[in-house]
Length: 230
Image 1: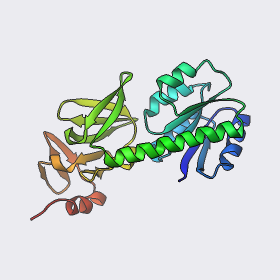
Image 2: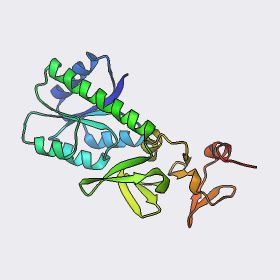
Image 3: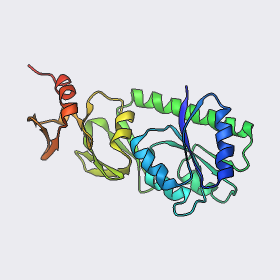
């Protein structure tokens, strides 16, 4: 197993040190390095990663603010020269908290922990009928069968359910990669729908509830193929 990871740190020495550590661990695949956290956010809109090495104190956008933007898209290992952020780390459920300078044994310990969390998440997603999202500082359970569709809204995703609406940070691409259930299908770059909730389908649209959802040409044949047509 290899975890796809990125480094987000404004200090060049810290970035180089983390890069060297990543290259020494076979279970890591370092896919990108960022000095600017906003560039990292843009990258995450289009790319999936399993783990982020995130500096806490950065100009313009702190590591804490960065985590607010990405929600639960990836595991986070915070890296900092101070210990005063341990409480925030606990609140955000980060995978680990590394104090600079980081030794190789301590780094390897953090990676092993991240691997175990990743395995648990994969097993959970493969056998579950619900998801949990972080909302107002707590985790809220949403059953798959209650979800109507996911809708992209800039840096956010609206989760439309039969009981109400939820909003999380994320992308349609990341949702598509993490939802391991055949009833959900991406039908447009901005929508993933629950196939069981479709009322009718026309040439370029479908209807769920009172919502008319576009169907892109590239997803139309897959959608039709997954329906129980007579």
